[in-house]
Amino acid sequence: MSDILEQPVAASKRPSPQRPKMKAAIFVENNRIVLDEKPIPDVGPLDALIRITTTTICGTDVHILKGEYPVARGLTIGHEPVGIIEKLGSAVEGFEEGQRVIAGAITPSGYSNACLCGCGSQDGPRMKHGFKPMGGWRFGNTIDGAQAEYLLVPDAMANLAPVPELLSDEQVLMCPDIMSTGFSGAEHGKIQIGDTVAVFAQGPIGLCATAGARLMGATRIIAVDRVPARLEVARAMGADEVVDFSKVDPVEEILRLTDGRGVDVSIEALGRQETFEAALRVLRPGGTLSSLGVYSTDLKIPLDAYYAGLGDTSIVNSLCPGGKERMRRLMDVVASGRVDARALVTHRFKLDDIEAAYDLFSHQRDGVLKVAITP
Image (cartoon, rainbow, N blue to C red):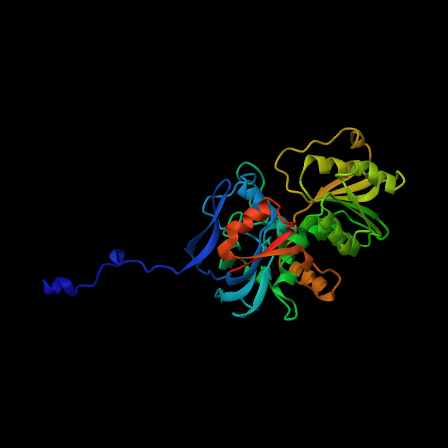
């Protein structure tokens, strides 16, 4: 008997050590994202584990909450991380543990076909839930995201970008998604010096599109919204004129302001049929509609507004570029003082209160633009 007791316990019968846990905002079912615990991720050779210091909620997260964009149950939500490197994978070079970093919402590998074609934002599987997903958007979409105490960043050498010491978390919080997305609307619209641009919807992305249009050289920017506070921020971000669509027909007003010429570029930043159609109707012949909105239903293109396909009109869409070089450039813009996005952070919550943050943000109460979440 004593010999039996002294035998080592079979490996298969040993209790497995419990992995340390972290708090995370988890998608449970439609209209339910809750704070719960899950294991801190293991770090692979090319990964980095970052301890989140600040993150935020995006309009796309609200689409997930409402079931308009399907993700797996049990997924940690969020794709806008600012944090400190907790642990580096064995093959990661050029970074140090303890370094403050951001990672883009889009995390290209750097070596896929999409990346090698110069379109890293589309580095992702071709089909998901019956339709093409948002390219290289993985955080809070196909892998666990940033609304947690820790985040595992894949392909860390391609995606981590050190934060300059002089910049605060909130100064760079818009870079991973909102600023990158808004700027991409201006970039893909190919705005030129002297252009007239209309930006439909002045939420966080629309406001950054307004700022991006100014950086690209537009000399007349018309911002469209109905919330006075947002129109005021739009002026601070670069709008020359504002149109309150609750008081006037925005198409008629923009055509009046441009003496019937129309605008060179319109940017749609809401993701609704009516704003898409209005953005199409205000274009000059040969103009460009740059679409940033995330649409939850089919779009229809009006025959007359599209000149039956004979008007030389361009319709483009874009997903915010990711990768460390994009993040570096955006932080350089912030550091230069040319764009100050701190006004977009209107509310602050602890991670423990993220369910309340979702309730506020999803119902757009109290003049909310963006919330800063700190674990």
